[in-house]
Image (cartoon, rainbow, N blue to C red):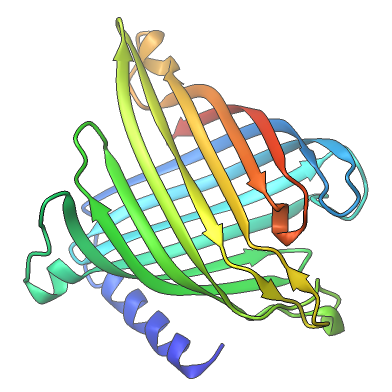
Length: 260
């Protein structure tokens, strides 16, 4: 990791943890089950994903991370008891500068630093950039994030996948609650675009588009318990050029989310 990224990371971590306690926080366990394509062998495998997710807000920004444990029913060195994680910390420019960026639908502007890590492939990516938070009627949240996509992976020499040149990422995230009769639902998820790049052997890595919309039914509320604690639904994973290859995929998953 080069010095500019170290400085950005240190600044964001310091600011995001400068208050002693979170103003709000939410921690969930997600369990997904579906059938996915290995983009390298084209084999189909039933896959379970157990994901610990956490989001929290502080005086000067917010944090979000998740850790996935992934296992499928084919021993092919792809998603065999592997892990994947992402972490993002955002510093609100309104909070640190005492200047309001609110204008029209725009609610705030933040500086963000992200890290993506994949276990077996030995992949590490750093994502410094800017997040725009939007005030859209009916939505709990809407954000658009533009970052770099800087590679710091181990590479083939250290038994990882080939390292890559740098690129950039655009991400849209949302949460939209609604009701039908006396039942509560949440339509949430994100969509990301990552630009094309080259691997360490000079081979072209395609740009990709990944969307993961989730429709959740508030099962806890339906059973007469507290709302927003137990959610049941469908997560749809939609890939164009999965992991930079040529495979396109549309895969539904059974989705359960439990809030601690």
